Length: 255
Length: 325
Image 1 (cartoon, rainbow over the protein chains, first blue to last red):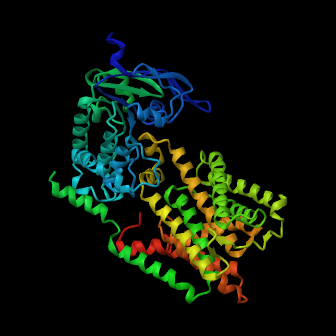
Image 2 (spheres, chains in turn orange, cyan):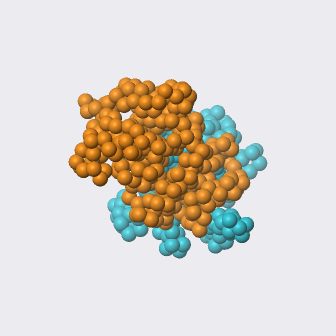
């Protein structure tokens, strides 16, 4: 473990534990996400990675333990509020607003800072100033030809791209991506992985994935979970050679 | 990206809906203005009151995704407030209507604060339970006169100028109230607030993750909806010169659900069409020996089975190839 200064750690979980009616889904997880890195959380089904993810993003409340964001305790903070602190998550099942257009999807994320989000008497045209910025973000994920379409019309891979554009609209310091590559075809995986790499240039990314191979060349640090506990942690080269990890992944070395 | 692409996108959004919609609205307005010369004004006013009630309800279910099963509480209570303030305290009709709207809004705030944290069926049941308490109060409180209701409410002079006992004056007043309420709902749906509301309806956890405290938005929507339902109830009391228990019953809460679903929930005009249809059927069937609830029930079942989107929703879908937003 590195002995770098603690402010290098942007997001930290200490002894994170979550019990559901006697079943311990996550047990004493200590996790440190370093600023500016891509950190992957992987594990087989039921390893508790989604639970850890939901705990970190405050969608679940931990039974025990502490979550620190930039040294501040956010264990009891509401999920909407951590978004305002710069910690923005995506969802496993693609999280778009299906009956809004692609442009409106991104604009909803952009409009909050205007301070008019409760103004039911104001015209929607007051939001048109946001279109340039929204279209820039849409362009960044190659969705320009789709801008006027409803999100429901997009193919799956494009929905994930839209989700990333919407998340980027908040300019988050930390992006938490829940299985961003799940269910994608090969061509989409490459494109999206490149996109994640690109947007991670000036921010921190924590992503949950099912497969070790998918995140191999994408992440700086990999944490492997099994049955709610951390099995191994480190860069791909180290983690992939760990015998316990190899065993956890169907007893083969081709994790 | 070239400027041209941007302009096209802008235009696509500005022009959304296009001119056929404006034509339809114009035609509808003309019809509404001429209607009392052809049809019975009291019948038309009843349609307008229920149309506003259904539109208010639709703001909640169609644009915020909240199914309230207690909207009669706002509609009926507001009717009592309007009737009492005008009859017993001698208030002008506009003051009585304002009081009715405000009281309904405050009740909406209380209902909302209690119910908003729950979703789906739980939300519906809490609103139903609360509205049943309101029904009990309406039955027991002395000022509502129990089974008799408040009868013989004078229509009075609007702003001290317009004599509402004249059927046409009353009609155009009701039409103006309806249009104002409808315009407010239209504006709300097409506002920055409406955008967030739709986002919450579409995907609440995602809206939370984007930093929106969704409970607060839903509460504002609930209060707006309750206030407008109150405005509709108060207006009905002035028109019929009566506030009675009928308007606070759970059947009334059910009726507004029916009107909205029939017309097309989440469409702006659907509730108007649904209200018109239900009120027409009720008045028409009242003079026949057919059992009204059975006929309306059958129509409802057929509508839900055949056009799931409601009448207007289905029309929009067929015409544009996609749903109304």
